[in-house]
Image: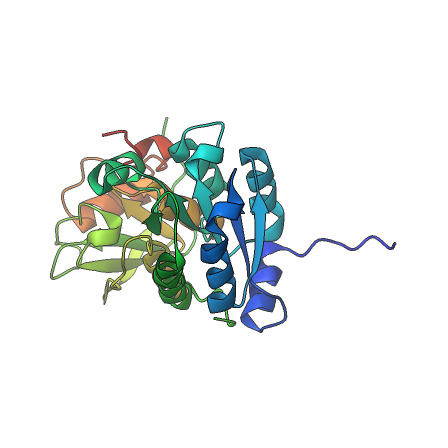
Length: 151
Length: 132
């Protein structure tokens, strides 16, 4: 197969804005099956591809290559602290919206992740209603970020 | 060591308290300020000053002000407080961020920058993430 030069991030964003490329959302989970309803709803609500990986390293690799619209991270799947993982993602691409599954109380979660720009804290087993909330937030920030034309 | 001065044309954004302008106090945090003072400089001299409002944004929407400033042609930024995500956003858009340090007013901060006295705003200057 002929080698194809990878698209730059700017070109990827432009293609997405023009509707030439589907948004993709990366979920990082060790037990993705248990929140299938959430991911199916998110897929439908945002007309996005959902890519599920089970480790930090795979997630970082996709953040570098796929220019995802959002990443949904279950901290139980990580081999490092959540804040460190989000920092690594932001250094790669600050346009990626991050939501995190966590059972921490809201105040404690905020304290641990303040300044990292996390879009939303989700419950450890997010359901369809949380998919609606997250999709709504992604739509709102994506409009102001101007990176997507498909949602 | 004197840092490299801003000798080329540049547009500098400074988070400001109302009413904005060179005499106004610096806004304490980039994302939560009332407005931004935009200072154009030419060969190290201030050539134009204008004030623009901040944009409303929700939790996790901290890239909105970054895009807002980029759309106004900003290529340098002075801030006293900022989270990691907007700092990375500015860096990835080619907007250099400087740490405002002890400057009390927008004018003092801009002059310090034009004189090459401000240091680059780095990750260790960012707020949050359990660090405070």
